[in-house]
Amino acid sequence: MGYGDTMAGTRAFADLLLGHVRDAGLGPRGLAVEPLAHLNYDAEVDLKNKALQEFWVAHRLPLAPAPIVPSPRPRHYRTSTRRHGFCDRHGLQLTPHHATPSRGATGAQASRLEPPEHTALYTALAARLGDAHFRPLARALNYVIVRGSYTERAVLFNVAQLDGTIVRKLKLLGQALPELDAGVISAFAFFDPTRSPYYLDNSPVPGSVKLKRLFGPEILRLNVAGQRYEYYPTGFTQVNESMVPAMLAAARDLLVPGGDREHLLDLYCGYGLFTHYLAASYAHALGVEAAPEGLAAARRNARFHPPGVRVAFRQCRIEGEAFTRCLPPPDDHREVVLSDPPRQGMPPGAIAALAARGPTKVLQACCGIDELPGQVAAWQDCGYRLRAVRPLDLFAGTAHLETLLLLAPDSDPA
Image 1 (cartoon, rainbow, N blue to C red):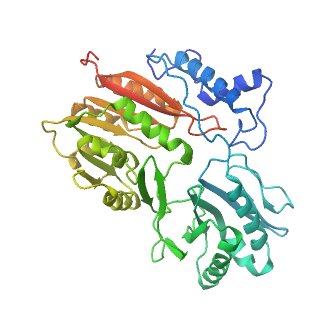
Image 2 (image 1 turned 30 degrees about the vertical axis):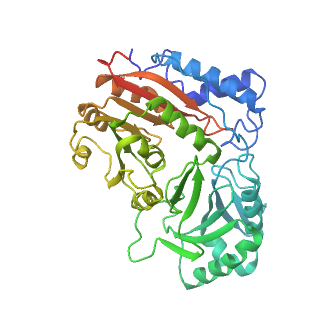
Image 3 (image 1 turned 90 degrees about the vertical axis):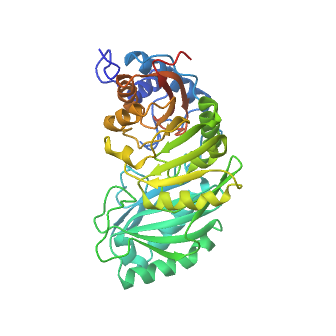
């Protein structure tokens, strides 16, 4: 039985965790997407540690995970939130993801994981959009999205229609946003005529503008762990700002940067969160990203470094073995790989291609914990073994974890 198999069928981490919750008489309540948010946080972390240990044994994974690093802000932490627009004859509802609209209800449902400012803003927007004057916009609305930091926010209106009438209504609503929430610094229209279930679907819209700025700066700002970052409103960013310093510190602690002897290769680098934080501790650093908005922000953020920090970025899709052609050939520096892929993890072909380069250390983040056994198995098949496991409660109140895996070649005695 391999690492990707279980001892008792396909037991997902969420199933194990929620089983512990029910056994403790603390059954899930509230929104389905935040099944643990009603718990005392110490109890939640304890249950997650128990479920993680059980998950590890069931999947016959090597080593044992360290205790979960708790979130400094376990409730009201999400700096990126969204509500789905549902319009009927009674008015407009803004419902959390996967929540079922209530027939005849209007307004915005509350969440224990959203900052109070987000909930208040959604409630105020639902009231404004319920006015007959805004009915065309309410009918065209797919999602309202709020993104930013704990101090300033941008609002994105995902709409299925973007004609003159909708634009005028959006601009009129946009003018009122700073009155509704002084922390709102900008607003955008995001055009998705397909009404995709993905709230920031990046499929092109032939002959049309995908993103239209309504007011304010085109870029968002974040200051974390002594580093300044900027990113575009449609780009990926971590949802739990309070956990980002702990995640960065864990990466540094696990990698133990080797200074001039090592080169850092940061895959799925986004706006360069890890790349820029760690670049000064390596001879040079290269970030790789497929999304144009992430790459543009990463390059823009390089200007916040002091002179002498060698950092560069390349655009490339990380698929199969071919993607390594966009990387520089190995040189006399030891190569260290950091990878923060999407929930489904890294493609096995990409893992094999990376392993063939012979990096001395690999640090991979797994935000989809059920993909973790398969990722560990793929690295093992390529001659790498697990050296440390650091789980972080990046998604407090939910049945998810972020897990950092440190791997090294089998031949490395350390």
